[in-house]
Length: 235
Ligand SMILES: [Zn+2]
Image (cartoon, rainbow, N blue to C red; front, side):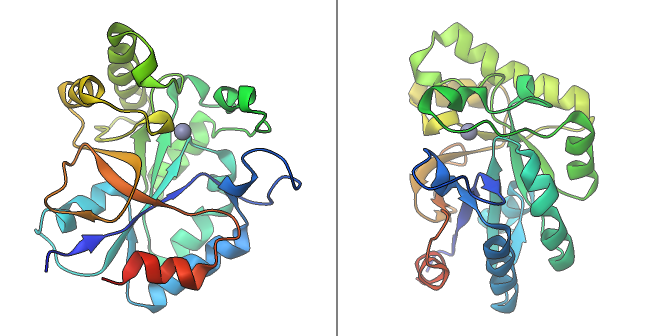
């Protein structure tokens, strides 16, 4: 059987906003995140960034691995997720919106999602120095399929250049904002030289998948963790 690798998708880690607030489910409480990571470890899984997951996916490396990804580069991930990742020796990928480094999730505001700070440049560098991966999530977080191909090309190529200028190493991992991707957008991502890209399509990744259209498993607040675990990890 072809091995399948779950790639978990998180957004924010910390105290969730009050009941009824849009986007609340995308903040996983720190204690839950810590428990989830420790359970993975106990079950013999290694939590890894996309960079560290790709060799498993390509069959160059054997073992139990789970991709850990965070969208949007939130500051509370730096504060609340990094300690347990360090404790367990796990790595993770955070997908940064380069024009909002040190800013906030302005793209979410129209949906009524409360403002949340993004990591500063210093925090991004600390994230990288801890062994984690800096991934790209465009310049401004647009729905790439709804802007002109020229604009989309700039969003995809320039974020890579901007992030590489900050972190001084190649940026290989891309994530489609809002999960919006079509053939043109996928081609632009390929032309910009990314090695892998994640979507919001639900499922576990396997070797036969297009590396630029990898599925993920969303982890939401209040997700019954044992159930999620079963869903993620059993064949
Ligand atoms: Zn996003």
